[in-house]
Length: 207
Image (cartoon, rainbow, N blue to C red; front, side, top):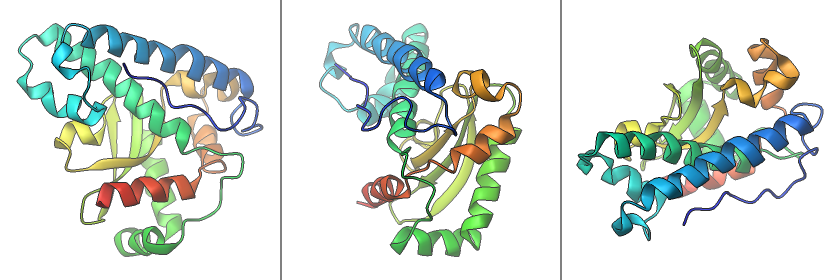
């Protein structure tokens, strides 16, 4: 059975950038619902119950039941995406990455500021609900992309690209505080990004 990633900070710890009510609603309602619905869908596939979420994603092309496949894609994506989102945020965030990740950012994007610009553009331009992503492959290369709904680069690339940072641009992630000002939310998001956590995901993607 899949469980939500536990937060190592309080719901109000990301104020004023992400407000307490949004955090409570986002984590306790939306993320919890995706997790519960994923577990319910997988109850029909007992052979997957002891698999990782990545293994479940890789199994999806073999599913002939389209209703079940859609349920696992949507809710499995919601579970996976939100685990990444919440664990890469911190009240001590906002600093710049360093080490190998910083070197790769400079190589692939020219500078950290240019990476932020590309990620922001991907998030702002995503029509409707979805995500903007920074992903890595096993060679350490980086790319910025965007997906609709609860899709992600791991699902789309069959594991070739692994997300290491995601900006949730579903309205439930920001509308209580920022209303229709998505760009303001994205600017605030970077103030609480924990680049140490992103680096851990980067190193794991390369291993």
